Figure 1 (cartoon, rainbow over the protein chains, first blue to last red):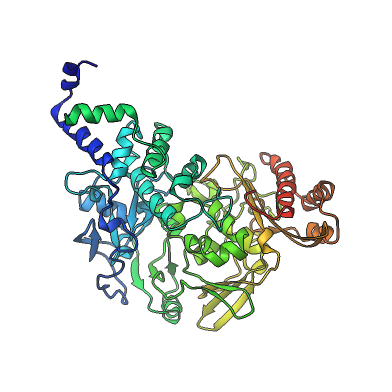
Figure 2: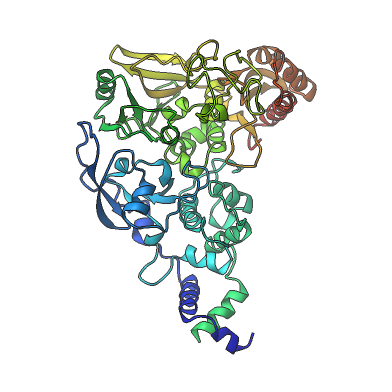
Amino acid sequence: MPSDSRKSLGTSRRRFLGQALTAAGTAIVAPKVLDPNSAAEAQQPLVNRHLPIQGETPVTLMINGQSHTVTIEPRVTLLDVLRERLNLTGTKKGCDHGQCGACTVLVNGDRIYSCLALAIMQEGRSITTIEGLTTGEQLHPVQAAFIENDGFQCGYCTPGQICASIALLNEVKRGGASAVTADLTHPPESLTLSEAEIKERLSGNLCRCSAYNGIVAAVQQVLGQTPPSPAATILVQEMTG
Amino acid sequence: MKNFAYVRATSAEDAVRKLQTNANSQFIAGGTNLVDRLKVFLNTPVQLIDVSRLDLKFIESMPDWGVRIGALATNTAVADHPQIRQDYPLLSRAILSGASQQIRNVATIGGNLLQRTRCPYYYDTAFACNKRQPGSGCPAIQGINRMHAIFGASDRCIAVHPSDMCVALAALDAIVEVESSRGKRQIPFDDFHRLPENTPDRDTTLQAGELITAVILPPVSFAKTGVYLKLRDRTSYAFALVSVAAALEVRANRIHDVRLALGGVAHKPWRSAQAEAFLKGKLANPEIFQQAAEIALQGAKPLTHNGFKVEMAKRSIQRALTISAQGGGVA
């Protein structure tokens, strides 16, 4: 491809991709809040809720390392607080019934569906959304791997897919099993996690564009099973000069 | 979702006391099924009592007698617990076959026992449903009943119980511990869920004011051979069309003991006592497994759209027994 046509990419897009691909080449250093062992689990003092709350009440949530207080009714879900009150619209509402996975976020490092979680029940927990994954300007390695491996088309399910994939990596590290694990007492490790295992472990996230092959490839890359694709490496060289 | 008051319980005693003082209250723990039902107005409690922070997350060996699992242990915590994996792989595999990691991370053992049917007529408030509104009728009987029961249904309700975990617990003869202002009691697993009969609005034999506090797994020497086979419309993250929990104790190629339970076929986990009785003392071979499958499906009453479940269940039983006889593993 002539360099002129490469240059015709919009500057912001070029910078975005460049940062993404550079990030992919660096060591996997997840932000501190993603490590379930160091997560500030229930460290915040818990508000006394021993008398019934009627109507709206202030609820303080720790999201992406920042404390947010919103005044909400008990029926408000975590998903609606994120999107409608805090403008953290990276987390998507797909089905709103726990069937599609678009609303996946991390709570104390574990993936959950924010559409099925009442916000008031999340007090004192550490919540991480797609907006909390970058370190400064640098994408999380899983975000970068999704870009490199075409792990999406329309992008609507992508924040949920990425949060689910990050949780998957932690689950594998701590020896979590799945329905297709042959030997429950010796679950697969990062380098031996099969494609069938990855698909099973990500089955709680649907992709209407069916970018599943790219998603699996992205996870395999972050697991260290495959190197970044040659095309992506060339792109990195071109863009970073 | 209709609004409700919210209060956090400080102990099991406090939870049942709060329930007693406000009869239109409901407990909430993981909420993965209840919040979904609240959204479509299947439940309209005036108050939710949050029991999720109670000290009921333990998974502990009992001296010389099995394992006791706190009602608030998550599905993930149980499935991944080293002793459960080692001694009760059937339970780990059944749990891992259900839902998705996101739901298993939040859903509790106690809540799993109380999840309600996914019958589409129950879920859609535009339809009548005897489970949702007693006496209003059951459109599923003349409707699209592909997912429905082939055993134990009534002319009021043909819904099936959705849990995978409960099929394993039925096979393992688990015991449910409950607490109320009247004290504590233990319920044998087979008595916990009930058939619809004339009151399909009641899924269980829990009495008013009771809170599930634990599930006890008795020791089962051959539980390590346990397998869970689940068949569904897609490979993962779907409810069972048919599932089988099976465990065999084979000595010198002869069946010494056996557990066999089916999921996706009835209003409760369906233990096949007659097939178990037939298998005991027989040789562990394909002909015997085939005969056991025929016995297990005697009395099945398929509906307009779910006749396939009969043959599917027979073949699933044979496969599950075959793999269990080989020592267990992925079915």
